[in-house]
Length: 331
Image (cartoon, rainbow, N blue to C red):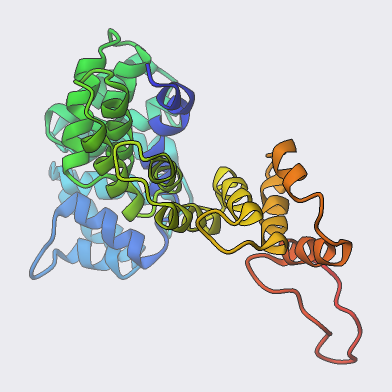
């Protein structure tokens, strides 16, 4: 089993939950309502209200339809209660609506119910029930469910471990454009786990995930470019991807970008910049004696400036307060 997959299982199983945790924003509301109702022209009334953030209106419009057995409306109501959108959060009530939607064949309602059983939110915790529901939603063609089911096959939780099946499901989800699936499928191809080894295609899949802004994929892709693994060696491109992931807050990328800056490999030598990124990585608990040795010669004043910049990152340190010109205090 690939080490990255094994170490990241718990987080990956809940990736879709994390991705929808802030649905009060309009963009998130649009995404979730399109999942429920599909892209509508003209839009469904409940769908349109949900998109615009009129959650109580959406609830009022969806309720009569849900009571008549409309599974999409039942899922929408489940979302409103599960996320506390315009109403008090009530996950137990949401689970009831998701269960009705699932019974009536709605794959998103089935998937969301699986996540609740996975966490034990609003329902008794049952990974066995979660696995059953993930499979039901995956069989209906819901890509996030295929992804989560693949992770269960990797982990062997309430399904027999099956790396071949995991690779097949990850490929389907990757082909749909899901960056987490592209990354994990790429890792399987690089390792030859569940599929024939194919470093070139593995690097391609990881590159696709990196293009979509997945920091872990950006770090992995940068490393491939640095080593020439699955792709042609390209130090400037490796630096670019390490920096992208570092800017996104990835500690590993911050550390590796700092090392390249400290030795001037693929980028101009800049000890102060390297020290700033080292400080940011250390803030997240990543200490690296090798990097410390590379920066041992940095002048004390430059080191102080670098660490001060890190304190205010991603902004810049203020020089004076706006009123009296007194030195500004760090937050």
